Length: 342
Image (cartoon, rainbow, N blue to C red; front, side, top):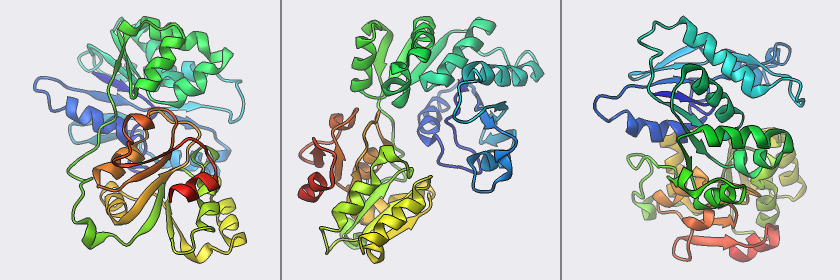
């Protein structure tokens, strides 16, 4: 099998796309199978010089890594941020093909392409499947359906590659229903919720570990709604908050915490390894996710696996796993809604 996706861990960002690796680790246990990974990375020369840029981090990733028995290739494809001047799917497919052309025939005689994230990754995987006359399975994971499929410039390419695929895996029933509304046959679709490594994310002794703080885990971007949590914390003077993540809103969120006079009750942490993250979940009173859109967020699955209840907005597939027995679903997305739930 060839796994193709820009969502795959590397030594610089070990949690990036960890949900893809977690699923495929189980495939790797099946006797007689083998797998390789092509995980393209964006490249933009000028922005790669700035140490604060994601492109600088990408430049530090080796072009080839080995994870256990799995070889992972990271070819580069050029992009111009904020524009549609470059066909991202075409550039990704061309970058992957450069890798494949260098391999001996036996290594590129894969029986199946496993593409994760419908656009641009899945469309690129479809180009490779057509060139190498190989069956294709795709996985829809969230914003590829919730955002990209709603863009007229991308819709036809996404629907075409879905039509070409033998099967499309959806990580939630909500995503499956959205694809059906776009005219995709239900027979083409199946649901496999993201997995959690239960050797890491376990309840443990919560009474011994719990310190009672509130926890939010996710990229510091508008979609995740961290600011709602800060404004709610202002109204909950007995609570403290730990935010684990990085992103462009970091300085803004720290400024909001200072303006609200709650900075002494908020701890910002950079992303941490999974084993350390499990400890944060186990020690929390609740995990909060104020997203405006989701597929099947790993944050809530990891938190529940650690025995920690979840407060989350009722979006995407969240309602498929968060119930009255393990958390609270918010029909509104505001600091007031969250404060009432807390």
